[in-house]
Image (cartoon, rainbow, N blue to C red; front, side):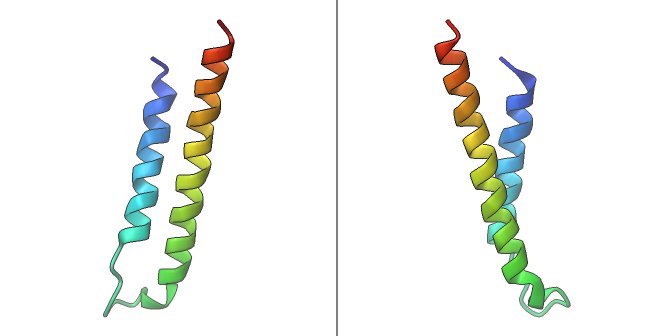
Length: 61
């Protein structure tokens, strides 16, 4: 298995962590929408990359 896939999976998990982070009563509370946006974008991008790599592996046979 390609070792880069594990890096992509960890990036997806980090994106989910950014979406779920609770910033109430912290100085970063005003940036919560930015963290959520970055988390959603990272989950989408890396999920699409994994799907693309799976299709490339499937059709290169």
